[in-house]
Length: 100
Image (tube, rainbow, N blue to C red; front, side, top):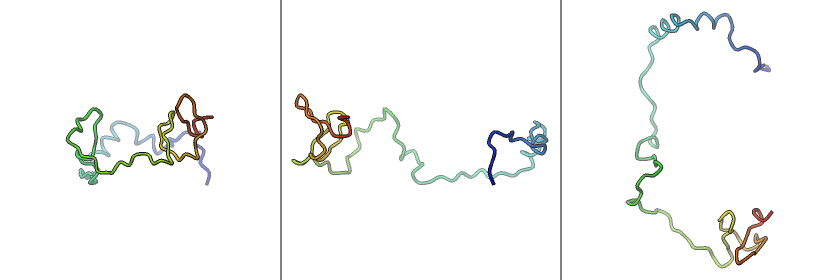
């Protein structure tokens, strides 16, 4: 069934529940659970804040320098294969994506 998103969303039944008294009455009669589903990644240790001091952190991956058949694009700074060099200007190399 197609939905008309331009049509008003409120019908006669919703208007009755919109009054402040009706909402307060519904709120008092509903027993809501106060428990929150927290995943392991949602803890404070899993969140990096901007400007946080990360000097005590260790790098857990091995950084491999560019190989002889690779170059770093002077525009997007991505390491690419030499077959993707599209322009070399003033000693700088540009990939085919950035050259255009």
